[in-house]
Length: 198
Image 1: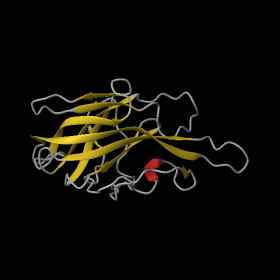
Image 2: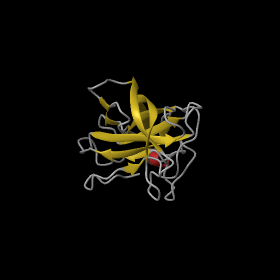
Image 3: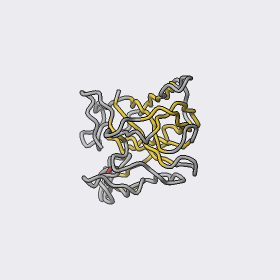
C-alpha cells in the first residue's frame, strides 16, 4: 500500500480486512525473482487487497531501484484498533524491509526483513463511527506497551490514561517498506492499525 504523505490522512494498514490470526509468522528473506517487492510476496495476513498487493505492507521508499541516497519518510504514526471487548489485548510487530543490490554475474537482489519493534495493544471503549473505514464495532487502542525496541528513541508511545486514544510514532530506520503483522493472542477477535507517514 502506498500512503500519500502530502494529505496527512491515515490509511488502514490492512484494507482487505482485520487480521484474525492467533500467532505471528515471522517473515523470511526472499529473492527479487520470487517477488519484486514485499507487497507482492505471499500475504502474511491471509487477506489480499483488490490490487493483489499484500495487506500490512506500507511503502516508505519503494524498491530502492534508484540506488542509495534516496529520500524516505522517517516515521509512521500508528493507531492500532480491533474488535472484541475493552481491555482485550493483541500483539503488533513492525518489520522493516531492505534489499540487496543483486550486483554481479547471475546474482539477484535479496529482500531482507528485520524487526523494528513489537507492541502489546489494549483496546479501550472509544470506537470508530458507522459507515467509516474504522466502524462503530471496532475499538481503538488506549494502552500500548513496548515489548521489543528502544523506548522514546526509536519508538515514541503516547499511552494516556482515562480511555484516551493511544498512538505510536515508529522510526522506520530508512526501510523501503514497513510491514505490520498481528496476533490476536486468542483474546481480541481481530486487529488492524491506522498508519500515516510523518
